[in-house]
Image (tube, rainbow, N blue to C red; front, side, top):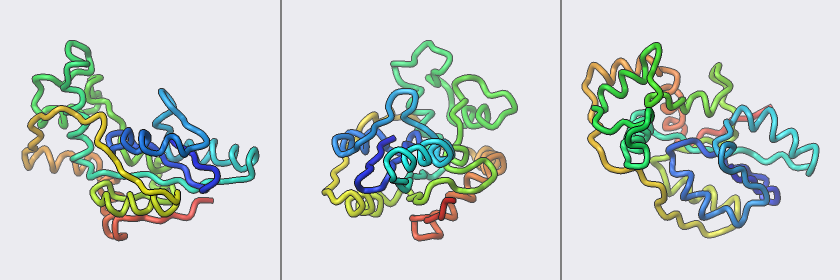
Length: 206
């Protein structure tokens, strides 16, 4: 997470949405940087804990912006990431696993460690459907996202791909896709809301 006090903006790092590239490009311009275990602080945590602290301490309550990715593509990114050499032999590795089986593990009642990846819905909302970031932009519309950041931060922005997941087949059967959409209906609905809002969902917080 990056906080730009002067520009009154906080960038929330939703996992597997290109956040490393954003952080590398904009970290020098941020007054506050949350790294390591706090890098992926959720929107709810920011709104409830961090934003009030910033307001009380600095007299600034930065708006939060985050990216949401197509749910299937974001899950596929997790699958590819965990298939890499650095996790080989660990309980998190997906090497040798079929993506269809991975998704079925993900939506099972007791997923193995490799299929515990959280959800974008949980990251972006209070758990009950209320979006907790003022701005959520579709990952697929990178020009819009870069334009938003450039305008708010008053800087030219060039993003270079970083931390790219290794390639792996990620096709889903129709049955498994239907199972995923049923199990994570709220996440798919939220993503549809963002696309229907022109790829930029604006929410009033507080």
